[in-house]
Image (cartoon, rainbow, N blue to C red):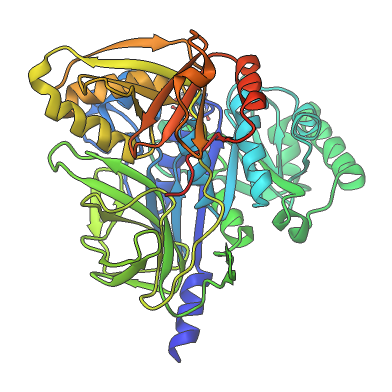
Length: 533
Ligand code: GDP
């Protein structure tokens, strides 16, 4: 087979997606079950082996286990039916949405997971809109059907009213709660019967049969059977027909009902998803679209994470491959620094297990060892070329705190810690002119990130700090610099500071005062994200 054809075929079999949901909808459970079908783990929830210590494969950090939330996005890969699948796990908690937004840039489609009893929740709405803005296809999985849930027609209505997207149910629930009997698969025209045997720890085979099978009338009972026939007739008549083009445009979401915990409906969902979800698409650069099938490797860094494994003090840069084929130890050109660099120790992930990758293709996510050379948003292109992938968002910090070390002898570790964590993109660092380095101002998008910072400094860098939250809510980079406190007037409403690159930044407590300052200083620009260096 000619090389280009082989490359195109490999890329065609890649599926890279993120699961978006509100905390507690069951994302960790679903991720685990998908991995189970991919044969990546045998017994869901017991990756670490010990029974008493069940926790999800996708939870990396100690703090996640302690708080029971997913703090950072991680990446998992598995193969199924000839497809190579990259799942981008995203933190559901809103304080980490910055990280999530950037992760969504690396995805080609999204699975929107909804708790059947709760419907569309706050965080789902936010993440949905990011996916919408990117125009990626969204597949809906309504979870926890083994429990009492909202009426499925009401859930469809909610998607339309709250999110503004029409839904096409691909299967339809029969009964609810303790009466949940299974689903009717509309494409295959068959009933898949629910069984909760095995409590979702093993794969379960669903019982199937055609809807007109008299056995089902008997099995479901007159009432549920009649209800099902009525519902399906209504959907066939008045509902939106499945239209793959509309799905690809993000105008229609295929909707599935199931129960991740008991495994019900997960495998049919996975199979449908793999056949309908898009393969890697072209990516935008200022010079035009980059086709994934271009032979030369290119990609961008969307996430940097330090100390993922306490046993190896290391830092990993996550790269979304946009074109071509990646090979171990290959040299690439980093547009920002205008330097060639070698991608050492490439890795692919299954939570705690890491595999060294020999090769990877457009669409895949790889992690490379980062000796401190990568920044979020970096484009890596073939040596001899220079371009930049667009669309990796930066978010202005909204909460600020003074962070001071308790023991002045630990200044060096403190600085190393905050600088590394800042390079990961989780915090922004500021210092007051003439102030020492025992105390720094930290800006974050979500307050919980301050807690994570304190925890990580203590655990990873052995530094205890005192945190004092500051009243500021806005940071603005001033261009051109040379903006002094005198120009604002001495006030408690603003503070002139410097960022890690000595650029001038003004912190404001309120929008009104900020607007006034902007109006009164027309010779300067006030940017809400750092200007390009
Ligand atoms: P996440 O916060 O979205 O990652 O949610 P988890 O996967 O941690 O699930 C939250 C809770 O919901 C856990 O107690 C799960 O056991 C439970 N859960 C997940 N899926 C289901 C389901 O299909 N049915 C029921 N009854 N509970 C579920």
